[in-house]
View (cartoon, rainbow, N blue to C red):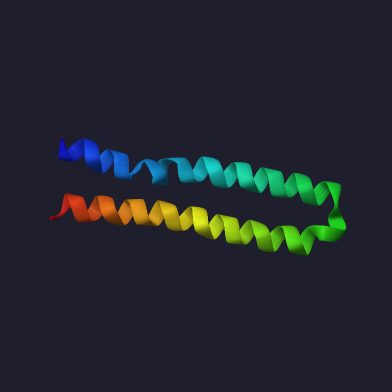
Length: 69
């Protein structure tokens, strides 16, 4: 049962790459459509990528805590 819980904690880490790739694709598409807004799009993209990465890291840390307790 513990291994299933650890695997569930690692799901955010698994889907982080997919969501970051999709976000980057959409940002590149938006910059291609409106090059004058590239600064604003880039800053919003970086904020979103940081939040996504934080979610992945939290899941990984919780899985490590569960594994080594």
